[in-house]
Length: 446
Image (cartoon, rainbow, N blue to C red; front, side, top):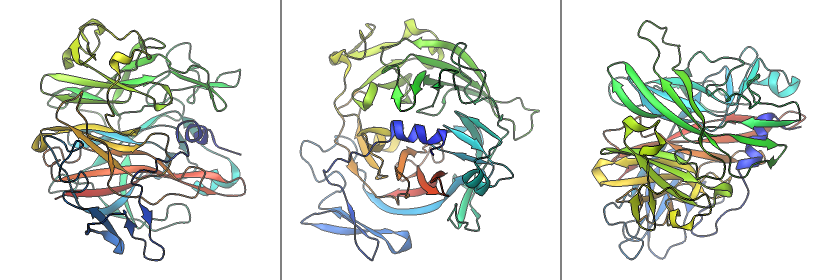
């Protein structure tokens, strides 16, 4: 029997894998190899190595796919630790810089009984369940890097280091509460007819204003309505939430407050701008939206102070910016040319490269192989995405998904490094109950 969380996995992580330039793990040695007539080695922790192709891998030495501004090349990849709050089991975690900490927001969350995964796996008991949750991560001193602590491996969490997370979540109310009329009387959004309004954040909060300790951010979340494994609405409406920092006198565990600004900010069958990812660069907040089945991606922009006013948005149509809004998800004028690989991922901007970056996963893939693409502008031209590593997968139905970059950890050195995590999914117990972990890796660039 599958957990409710597994429904998310089944719905959004699929088995298809693009066969282009897909690495294979060498037998015995655990190395990752990429076929190439000219290759050299990139160091990796744990005795592993990654081959790079020819001149300037991953993007090569030129040609039509070479980016005009940036040519990032992996120097090393090292495992950091498992992002975890021992009280929680959850998947698909993204993050944003939040003052002197990192704010981590995740999707479906199971609240464990006495921090005991085994109780959940074998007895089916849990203290609570919500469709989203949040936590803080502290930074190590000195420098911008995660706090890492030793962890004693267990059957279910088989890591020797952890990146500890903390925060006071509600057992019954999700971090992003369901809008009225969307079965908001329970944390899962479960409805009496067996359907569910699963408000799963696809991207973390976007900070639009920071004045001392007062932080304001926004998140766009699809009003996904599902029954079993079927999406009842292919391209649902999108809710806009405002996230505000806790007051100065609050306990460090107190999470930001969340306010529903508009439960239908984008209407059904409109492109869900902001849900797939956001980037603030210069005077603009850029918002990416993806149509159903990870089919097509479009981009809009707005000044950060005007987020709540839909009349202030502009859209990229037919190669130019303007106030005309796309007619809907099937408006081909809005579709961008491969701004990433189409799967779950993160958009961010790197000053040192003068480039927008997408780092994530292939469309419709549950194989945790991170890929990267770059562009000098939010709308493109984007390079073809290329694979930069191959993370270990779990042994559940879908081994790994929700690859997320964490640019908020090292905002000043993104041309030199980036932290990346994903959801690793393993099955345990007589009912093959899913156990979710969030391994984090540190990439450095040449």
